[in-house]
Image (cartoon, rainbow, N blue to C red):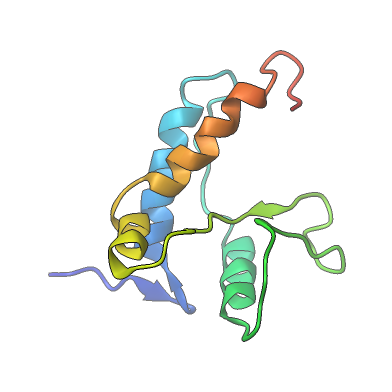
Length: 112
């Protein structure tokens, strides 16, 4: 039986898959406690992405909400086409792209 993946307008199967991929990388470094979904942030991001006419620079920051201490990185598939969009859902391309930035991160200081 297929799991019902849509909850509160979010694809929770995708969220679980993305967290698994993220935690795979996270476990390689100190502080590797697995992350869990922050559903309020997930819902906020999905609502923002669903807003007609939205434009993003790769980061959603809303200093007027509970997200005053962080920004949410959003992967943007830059190649048009159904196969490229499908790859975002079926592979770890978004997480791999995020992790490629680790070369700029100082694991000793915790800063970029």
